[in-house]
Length: 192
Image (cartoon, rainbow, N blue to C red; front, side):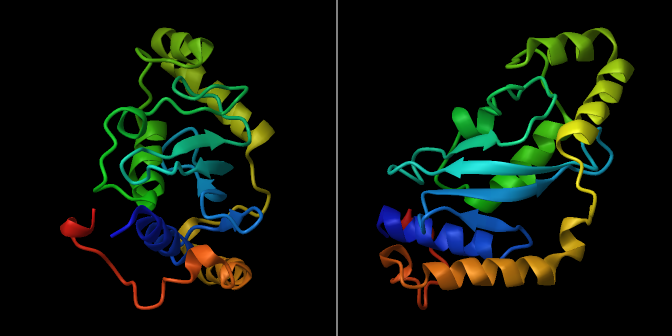
């Protein structure tokens, strides 16, 4: 399977998921995903637009991930939104796909910050010295930068997101990048 076809399949799966996906200029290599903070974390009421930039070498090279609105977290730069996530940056494998980032990797990062490998030293220091103060401040930053007044859980907005994603797919349907997707339901290990 060529790299372009793999990207098409992975992006299509993301569009068909519970996530709201927005493309810019009809490109499959750069888009944003609405990401809800995981339950039982200081981020649980937060909603972020996460920018995904997929390199030409995908799936052999990991996508770049960045939070477009601010988040206070040891492993996320407060100003740029860059993510220090080992599995994305260093241990990425072609067996992972784009949905893994939003279903597994980012929720795990927000639930279990790693203060020993910080991009935000203030957050790391506060988490290490006073976990309760860190969590309180992280919640305050959620309210300031990421609170969705119409907060709904991802799985309760599935139909609405599917409608929005269908509009995006319709806009992309004439795109050369999606032209080979008919009948492409999955792939095997030999396709990687």
